[in-house]
Image 1: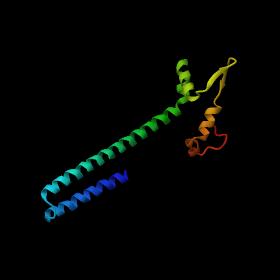
Image 2: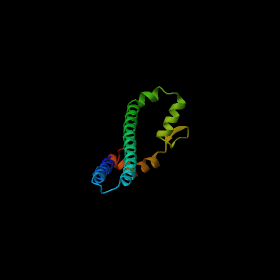
Image 3: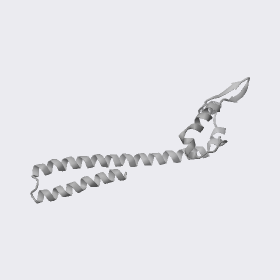
Length: 131
């Protein structure tokens, strides 16, 4: 965002200098109009990018807030779910869950190993045995 603001201000300074040049007759009115249109267009693009970033930032925070709320209520949501919904949830959390000799079995070792090697796991600072 700071980079976009700096770029926007740079064009604003150019417009100001160019206006002085026009009044001091260092540039023609045609050149002024042409460059003014170009700089205003670039400023409009920068403002749009700034708005896009701002909207994405708000959406990110809303999504994170919703996710945390769901995580806090995960147990009660799971308990109140229908069996089919529970199965979908478990398949999402433990994609390698299976039944072996009529007993539930978790084949999550490969998933856990992949997760432990991931950058996200390292960012969390988990020690061996965290999972």
